[in-house]
View 1 (cartoon, rainbow, N blue to C red):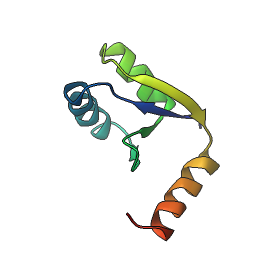
View 2 (view 1 turned 135 degrees about the vertical axis):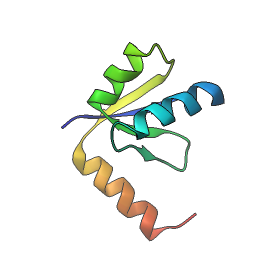
View 3 (view 1 turned 90 degrees about the vertical axis):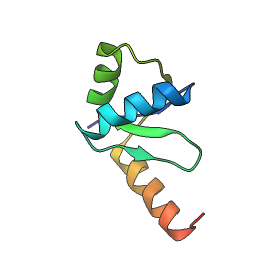
Length: 75
């Protein structure tokens, strides 16, 4: 499964996107205010015409390692 690391330019777009994405799939919110969403999330965001900045494609291993690093070093 492919995942995308994305960011939203505005709080309004972020709020609308989070509400829609969270009811449809699992998403990960990172400390740097970026998000990791499955590839289907990108499709949904485009269909809903919600603006976002695509940062990079990431693998399942990247997602797992990111979550482990955050648990090891709490903010």
